[in-house]
Length: 56
Image 1 (cartoon, rainbow, N blue to C red):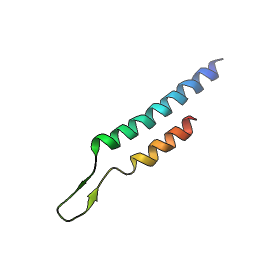
Image 2: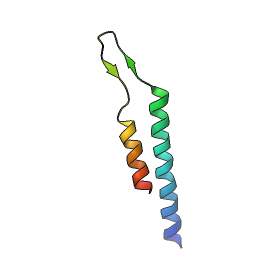
Image 3: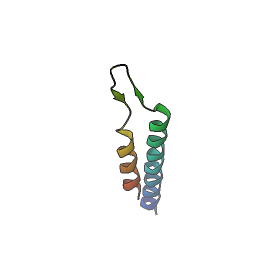
């Protein structure tokens, strides 16, 4: 019984971290500087998918 609760909490925390990663990538946004270089938090998108997969 105790192990199932721990796994349930871990699952929800992984899903929550995935949602946080997607929200952060949306809030931070992307911009192009004066030299034409794109700056975006691309690492948050695959990290969010990874958290969703681990949570599943």
